[in-house]
Structure formats: C-alpha cells, structure tokens
Figure 1 (cartoon, rainbow, N blue to C red):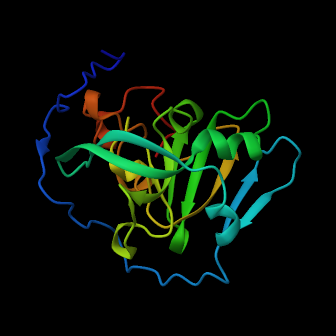
Figure 2 (cartoon, rainbow, N blue to C red):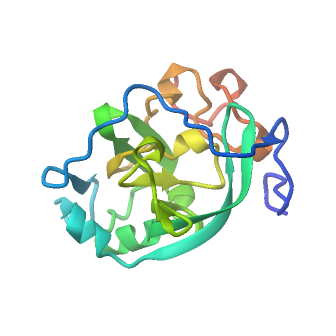
Length: 204
C-alpha cells in the first residue's frame, strides 16, 4: 500500500470498472503530419538549450512496456492496461533538467498543457505511450504520443504530446486553471481545485 492508500487490484474511491475504452478529450482530433512533427524538451535544461526529436528519431528511442491501471476523473477505471513507448526516465537522461527543477509541464497539440511534479513524471510507470498493447494508438486516443501517468487521474496525461518544459516552480496547466485539482491523486480523490489544501498548488 502506497502513501495515498493505493492497493494493487483495487479501485480508488468513487471509481467504477469500465469495459471498453471511451474517447474523451477537449477540442478536435489533430491531423498528424510526420514531416512537421517534433518532440521538444526545453525550459530549465541542464545545458540551457533544447533537445528536439522528429517522429522517426523519437520512434527509435528505447522502447519499453508497462502494465498499469487507468483512472479517469469522470469516474471510470480500466485495470491492467499494457502501454508501450518511451519511458519518461529515458527522455530525462537524454535531455537532463537543471538541478533545481521541481516540476514538468507536458505540452500537447493546440497549446494544451498539464503540470506534474518531477517525482510523478519520473514514476517507474510513467511513459510516453505510442502503443496500447501491441497496437499503435489510434488518433482518437492520442497517436502518435500520449502521456500516461498511472499514479494520477488520466487528465494529467495529455494526448498528442509535443514536448515537455522543465520548471523550477509549479505552474497550473490547462485543466488545473479551470477548476481541476493541481495534484490529481485518485487514491486521495483529488478531483477539483476546491478540495486543495494549502501548498497543493499555485493560487488560482
């Protein structure tokens, strides 16, 4: 059992098991253009610069798989999903942050963003997913890359990821600015900003 009360094989409070994988997102599904796509790492990097991979280069990075549960803030959960892709730790090693980085902003298409504590970003199950099981993600589910952070509600893992920004202080992302909890731990049922305790996030 983890610090927040997590037990393997159990559902977080208020969740129900979902059969099938619903499509949930805000806005349209972007059109993927391989010749224009790149994944950027920028912000407070160790060398002050930025690192970019095109789609072919990103697809050639070391591939790994994780099996983890998926918890949506809309109260459905899917258990034991297999994800394949690039571990967040791999990206961090290839494009390291400065020593004083505490948070990461994950950036996606249309300027969508989600903030994460560095520890959550580097959780062993966190992954830039390109596949579910053996199959590439569909466009509706985030192809070519979506962020998966199984320890948090699924909105913390955006679809259609285009890069990450290293930050030396926390800053709210898209949904966090619009009333969702800044941390998003499903085991503590941190769904909405009104539930936040002092220190959970920047002031709205």
